[in-house]
Amino acid sequence: MKLEILPVLGIGDVTEGDDLAALIATAAPWLRDGDVLVVTSKIVSKAEGRLVDVPADGPERLAARDEVLAAETARVVANRGTTRIVQTHHGFVMATAGIDASNVDKTRLVLLPKDPDASARALRAALHDHYHLDVAVIISDTMGRPWRNGLTDVALGVAGMPAIRDHRGEIDPYGNELQLTQMAVVDELAGAAELIKGKRDQVPVAVVRGYLGVARSTDGEGARALIRDAALDLFSLGTAEARAAGLREAAVLADGPGPAPADPAVVDRAIAAVAEVVAPGTVFTHVTDDEVRAGLVATVPGWPEQAGGLALGAPPAPVDQADLVRFGADLQRLRTALAAEGVSSALLPPPAGSTASAALAL
Image (cartoon, rainbow, N blue to C red; front, side, top):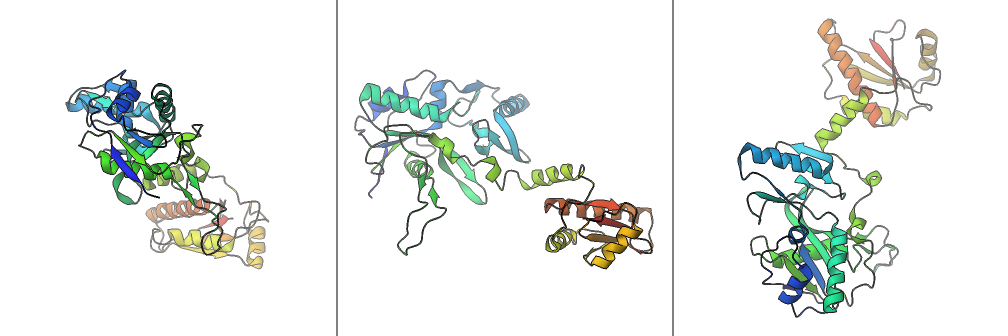
């Protein structure tokens, strides 16, 4: 495969109501069937009137921007100082919901297109109907990546080509069947086009030639295919937000052991998770001996026979009021760690004759 990346020059400033298909076709009369047109989302937003007026500076501008951000936010993912990572109503996770203040008058902010896939389909249809061009269209914008510095352009909307190249079921040169490989080809093409468009060169459109033989006859699912299902998202919150959510859930933990005995290895893992943050002298011991458990059923009021384990806590000696407060906090930390492992627990009095201060039925 041989690819060419070509800039579309001379489009100029785009304002509300402009005909993007006409602007692009006029600036690039050399477009041909099978080209992939990569269009910066900002000019799509400007043409569609996705701008809001705000004060030019001062606290009023910040307040107005916060109000706009709240309206564009479906869910806050992480918040650090003035930086907010949110999920937009489209499903994209990005800084400040993609709201942009660059390459626009100081008294305006540019929002993302309302429906980037629909915008891509409309532009593709206009180029086909009025200029007899059969091209694919990608609406792109800049995003950061978790765990990596730097930005890259990705696809927000797509028409005329699949967003993902699915290799699952194919056989590699060594005879191995590919099980997981799905390539986000539209993101790769958007990033490649950004090398030509740049951030200050006022080149909002580029063409990738050579990737497609011909555009698809149908628009396809669009960039929605790139949005990971919430049930499969292992990193749906920032660390601080996840911890806060865990503490909120821990405050209303079900008070009772699980229906089946807890896996000893899982319980030991939960104990190890809190070992470095508990007060000096607090010791948790996981007891799995059947005779010990039988004795607990007989000596501890309310101890359930089906309890699959026991965590004993011993506070520092001598015990004063502050020690008991710290010990109580340590027990709740352990219950939270157990809950994170899917282990329910019940806080009960210690066994008769024990030197421990409390017991957990698991």
